[in-house]
Amino acid sequence: MDQKWPQEIWLVRHGQSAGNVARDAAEAAKGLMIDIAERDIDVPLSDLGLQQSKALAGWFAAMPERSRPNVVLHSPYLRAAETARIVRQAIDPYSPVGSEADSQVVSRVDERLREKEFGILDRLTTHGISQRYPGLYEQRQHVGKFYFRPPGGESWCDVILRLRSVLDTITREYARERVLIVGHQVTVNCFRYLLERLDEATILAYDRGSDVPNCSVTSYRFDPRQGKRGKLALDLVNFVAPLEAAGAAVTASKDVPAAPKA
Image (cartoon, rainbow, N blue to C red; front, side, top):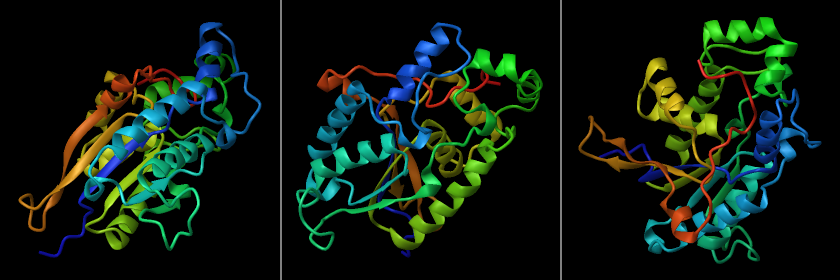
């Protein structure tokens, strides 16, 4: 059989970031802005995020070598890159020192895996959006997050469009491999939309039901019995047992605040 899919894909949201912490503080204080100086791309992991990433890395490292990821793709945002680096160092003994030729794991940064861009709403709290841009706030409530695109930013559809090309790359370059993707909450949900062939109502219902926990795992395994040439079948959803087993707190704060869920 001509298999186009990887044997397994793991979708992981980065560990808790300093931005998550600042966002929670700003929302609790009914502030307008998140108090953080870095660009969103430069926001690092929090201390808890480091702990979560190490817990996740330990879970992957405990797998038999033939079952671990051998391809790691990650967002260029620092919090995702740090999470990916910690996991890779745990599963690839050559990653800290050796050349890529020695490595057992292919690691690539891919800008298409970046966080959804929020444009002029970036760093604003929910209260801040409603106060500074009431027209946009109302428009988003009417249109819904799937199609609403803030000025200078992206809708979920825009994210899905770039992730379609990521899947094209994966099927072209990593068929039969074991692929770990480290990204953000929206990228995890948008990959689910694509891989599970969902519609707007279904994916938004999942999103309303719960946020994607930091360092949680959503995974798919190739099933040759599905379809003409086999398909990826859902295995785990927002799996946080590795964090719980290691005593790391489970968190599910949004990366960047936006208006309330439609």
